[in-house]
Image (cartoon, rainbow, N blue to C red; front, side):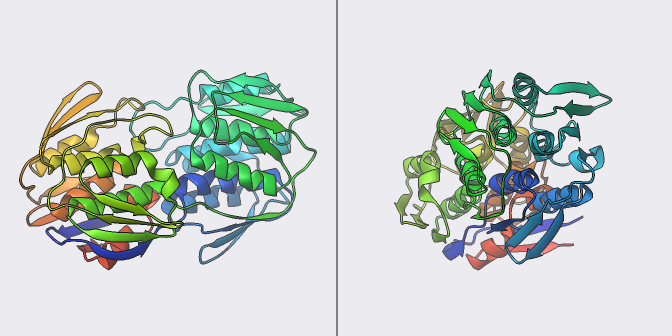
Length: 416
């Protein structure tokens, strides 16, 4: 099992490019199931989750060709509209095959998903929406069994904001009869990116990026090409890496407009930030000021950046209060940060982080994807050597992270 070994104390500087977004790539790959003609995707990141999704789609009969960051999915023949537990257990995004399979094939069998152990992420909103569109659903032995001759347009009001729920229902509705309206829809940029791809395939989706999305169903979708948006969470993590080390970096192939909440907090911490059309510059102070934050659905502060900012607060001047409102079990990285010398007190969904002058290197264990990034950031600034175990979590969502950090001057290496 791979691990990362980090010698802390190096100030990051230089320029590095941001990869395509994992949270956009996975639903876009599933969107290919909706058409009998090829979907070509550019800027596809090389990630474990992308590889897992590719294997899952291949088992259904999808032909996939990959050349560097370009991927072509030919879904002309879907031989097996099923997502078995062996593939689903490591990646929750596999639930995104449910809507497209049901809409295209009239049936689907999808195991209940797994993924990071950061708390309950129920799929009841997915099922509620499909039922409203006329699907017949059963959940037996851990598998969702769905049937529908053809889905019908419906008005769907979700009880809570769900990104994958919005994406699943949006994809299913593209081939439904009539118009579907999703209210209380997720507003994330990845939802808008998916809508842009669906429209390029011949769908009629409007309102993506707002809380009301309208989809007018069509008989079929066709071939298309689409470039995946930059990964805003990777960009935010790299900005935090520069900030925690007192560095100065320029990120290229980035989308500054998708990072407003993160940039605001980094500026509150004392960083100077300038946005360009497709790039972001950051210059950090000698020592950061502690910031308080509350996670919320987009355009609020992203839960996927909460762990990274806890690492920043751990070495900042003052005290930061972090409130996690999305997942109830997303503070598992706090205990590992404490092993490095961080002063953190957890009370329910609130973490109080008092900055210390210096962290000390130690062996720590990654518990989920973003916790892995948090521990890498802490290792960059800790005195001595830090070893981060179980980085398979990191490989699920960050492309060549140690190479990118090394390019900026970090002393970091992967040990097999």
